Image 1 (cartoon, helix red, strand yellow):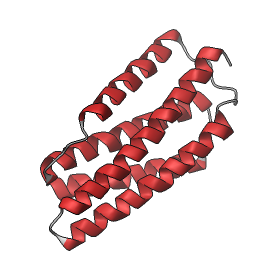
Image 2 (cartoon, one colour):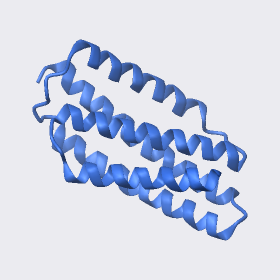
Image 3 (spheres, rainbow, N blue to C red):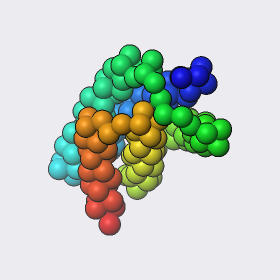
Image 4 (spheres, helix red, strand yellow):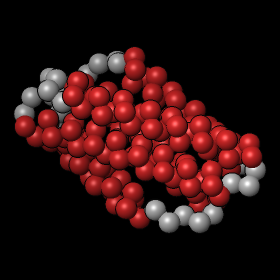
Length: 151
């Protein structure tokens, strides 16, 4: 594994950790904004799951960063770097949401980005990690909940 590939995976994991941390804070803010007790409870559940995911990704940094990666092309490296950069820019611009509709849009974007990065991590590792698949299923569940509520 080249140094660039190692940093690429480490950067990806760092952004996943940041996405989960941001998601957890966001869902706590949404729970505080919600007037419907059922919605408030659901946002608290989502916040808790995001916190759990963050701990898992922190563990991945130790477990996966020194692992041999699939060969990746320069185009792929460039794609991942640009995607990471844009996600970081997005995270920095969405901290002061003050209504449920905007909060839902932000949450959907966070969940989509997390799914995208989990998929890219699977590609880099060249393996079908059962835990990564399980996490992707949870993120898909989050998206389904958010889309269903938004409708």
